[in-house]
Image 1: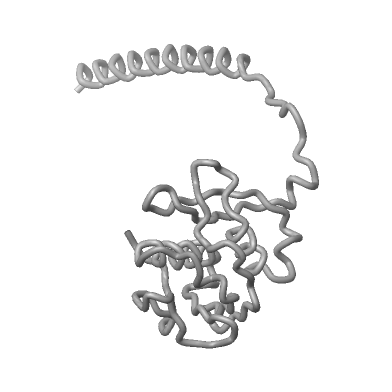
Image 2: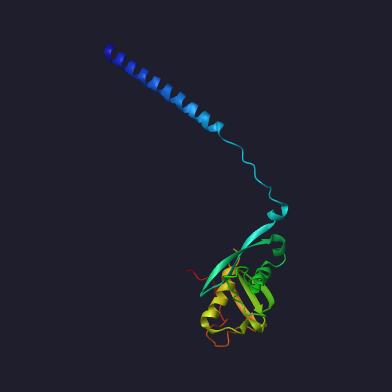
Length: 185
């Protein structure tokens, strides 16, 4: 029994010595690493004007597809009627020269009404003009839907032309009888 206790004490002693050596080694290495940390100082402070800005995504044509264009805008411009402000930016067209606008030239917004999770957008008759084919018609609709459904409270878009419901593009392939929702790809 004494031999067993003696060996146990020797083994525990060795473990203790190894533990102390490893501890000292770790402590010195940590001390060296922390002495190398320098304080980060930003080059410039964020201005009050920058703090009032937010990012919105507008969807424009790139070939036969839609791609988002991010815009940084002042939050104050979205206070009164955010849907109209965002839609006006979409009508104006992209800043990126590689993208092209989707909404026909001369289109005006007569009104926008939020009804539950949907927006009812009343466009002028110019919305129906100079549109060539079903593909372009669908891109126009999806451009509007994708842009406005980026806002969490909006899930669908109903389109009205000069106050008249159930209109459609002149070729009759895309009508506005339904509420348009975002298409998952």
